[in-house]
Image (cartoon, rainbow, N blue to C red; front, side):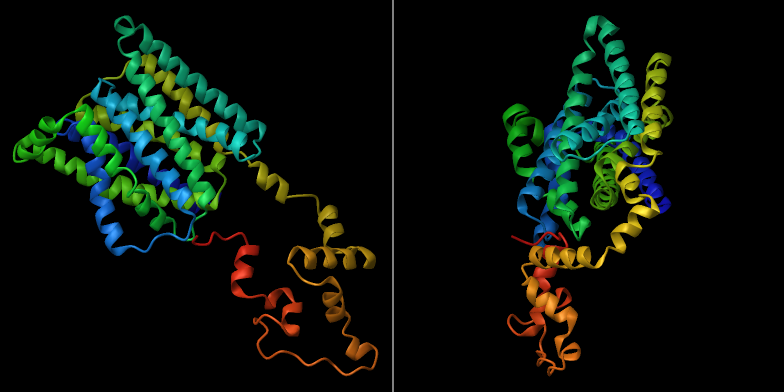
Length: 384
């Protein structure tokens, strides 16, 4: 990953870390499930009216919205409303990183280096230590919020995989349209679980100090954490393997715990900080090594030379294979390369003035394929 993208990933970590105190003050005013619906509705309405949909299959938009938007925040907000400390929530939610790496290896067949696998193992050990410590506090009463937060991390990981598979040419548009998915399901959950009375009270008391602070926290969540942070994150996930980007999210707790201490006066025990340091160490260990994809690209020079300079028979076979894969006639391609009109004294065949048009000799060369076919060959996602 280039240095610029590493810095962008760190910027996302800062915005998401500061978002946890913002969520805390917003939850002082709004019921948790209604807050999720409100958060995404403020983005969804202008998106539907003014933003062109992303050029990706809708299944990835729905999957991204369901994982990142619905599952993650349903469980996270429920955990924080049930007593999950703000700083600790920012730490445990980073379980999304090992979840993403493992699921990418299982479902997307992304290769892991030994360093990445070791980093995931160290981070998981830290998260397990935190869960066990919380299970011993107050007879295990604080374990449920930890488990809910872990479920939120799993939802985030599923959203990461959908983002990776979408490979959106306009990642910010994908982020905006992802926000269209959560409002209606979360509003339904809110009305069923929290009730219309709780929703109504939260809206009629916005003039109080608590209400104004909640609006400020909601504005930060929508404008900075979601639009800026998620937009940059989606762009990084579309450019790099999930296992390379996801571990940077484990740096969020450094900001989350620090900001919760400075802004909210929230204490964190030394035991939890020690386990948290292990989590951060895991992300640093897994994200600073060379990825498996980079190792494959940096093959020995003699192997590349053998690929780039094959013998005449191998070159002809490779051209035939490429032509067949592109839907071309191998004999036509050979004829074009050998230029029989010059070698055999024959007249050069007439060239089509529109090489991109179906038919004519223009179809015999890969560069003259129609634009749509070239994009499919390049692996670009097309609007269904």
